[in-house]
Image 1 (spheres, rainbow over the protein chains, first blue to last red):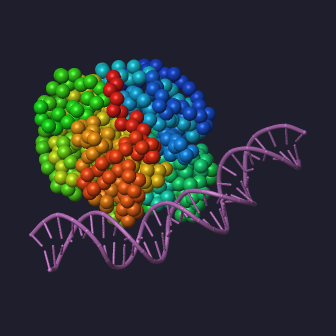
Image 2: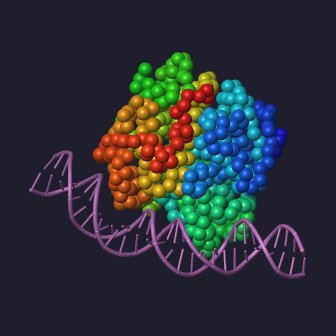
Image 3: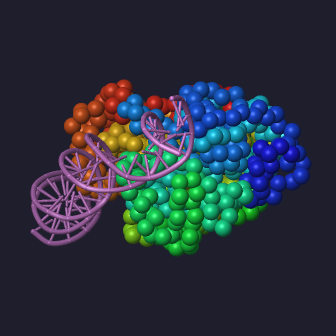
Length: 242
Length: 242
DNA sequence: CGTCAGATTGATATTCATCAAGATCGGTGG
DNA sequence: CCACCGATCTTGATGAATATCAATCTGACG
């Protein structure tokens, strides 16, 4: 099995059992691999992609740019995320997808995904599920931006990322690589660069998290979760019949 | 056909053609009707609903409440919205749904929706689509809270609501009913009540919108859209093969 | 007429953005 | 090896945006 499908299966299997024949269907999908350097645009806003992009390694984000030069990163993606699976249904991209680090992706043609939706109901629901989990995360982001302090937003983001990365085997013992600049972080948190810097320092001062440039170490996950109101329900990391 | 299924079909048909036999499948779904008074909780956070809620009349919202008493309304729902269709896959609610006005809803059992997903691929994609449009709207909300001024958030919300209500026949000639208190509005916009009040006044002062308690009149939609950066792409109101 | 929810206003405190400099660090050419 | 450079991080100072507090106003309704 290709690394791309392997990590996708790992991600989906955390939510419900995938049958061998379902994994097989996934393994037989066409894959057009591609590499993007940090900062590159993977999918352009307003484009009509003919294939969906599965992130295999690196960090990517959905981005909305404004006329005044401001930018909001509305979602952060980790390996195993089927970043624009929804493009299968939405057709026209209402945002762009950018590489926050060097990224490896594969593109899977919409036609073949649609074929799965015609013939494999449970696997279709698993793909549907993956878009609804994305939506759950998005909802949480909305609540964070609306009613949480900068420190809570940042701490919550760290908790979330840790669990998401752990689910695909990319984090353990409280540690994960997070190669992101504070400027990009400010576009996620909806803050100015200066304020983001001060918030990172504030988080460090709590001693709950150590953050040395590209490595984040969560020293006390439970305390961090408590302090930021983190409740992992929305990540749906419990296997359920779907 | 029941009013519930009628309005659902009207909403879906704006996105792609529904075949008569697909409408038929929807019409044969069991419906448990229910009424909720303004302020009532329709679905509780952390519950495991056995059915999904279709909003037939009135306004509802997803709500996330915080320990400190603050509340964020992460999404606004209008008639025709299948408010918690995603509950079919997510199982456990990570937020509550509340009635912002008196509401009529019907509940459709998950078992029957799952049956559709087993036998009617295109209709399944249409339901999937409806959850991804919800997600698009949520993404937009995130961008609004992160990088837009209060006045832009409010104006953008008005533009969006107008088009969504028009799509199901509940708005015309720039007018629609919007029975919401400024306190609730502040929970949508992520602002304090006082600041929300001043923002509403600021919007009125532009003369682009008249707002007399429960009736909103958009005087110049294009100008309002321009001023708030509104681009309707994300609402997917164009029919496409899905 | 009294009451109550919602809208509005003014005053003040806090948070956050912006502006303008430095400091740090890895890489690169001489 | 060293001087330089650009990207990133950090700091201080200032002003604008927003929250909070405390009234007051308004209209619907018993």
